[in-house]
Length: 88
Ligand code: SF4
Ligand code: SF4
Image (cartoon, rainbow, N blue to C red; front, top):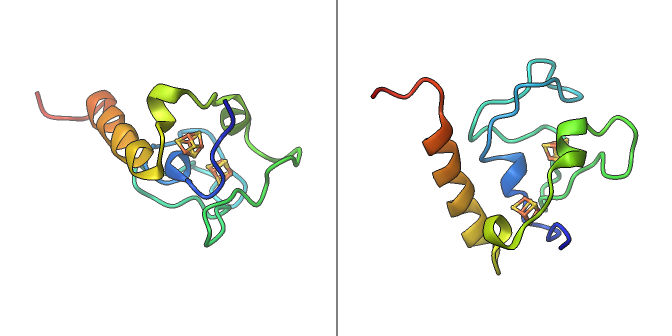
C-alpha cells in the first residue's frame, strides 16, 4: 500500500535516532519533523536527502489503517510499548 498523503503520523509520533536534514540528532517521539509541511507532507519526498529510515518505512494496513486517527493512535501505542527508558 501507499503512504496516505496528509497523514504524517510517522513524521511526528515516533522517534528517529538517525540524522534528518535540519535535525542532526534525529527527533524525539512526538516531535514534529522540520521537513513536514503544514499539510503533513514530506518536503523531501523523492529527493536524495530524504533519510534512509523514512524511505525504508513500509506503510502497512495494520499501522496506517483506514484513516489518520488510526495511524496516530497505533504509532503512539507502538512508541510507548518500545520506549527504551520507560520505568518497569
Ligand atoms: S502511518 Fe502510514 S499513512 Fe501515516 S505517515 Fe505513516 S506510512 Fe504514511
Ligand atoms: S524527512 Fe520526511 S518522511 Fe522523514 S520524518 Fe521528516 S517529514 Fe517524515
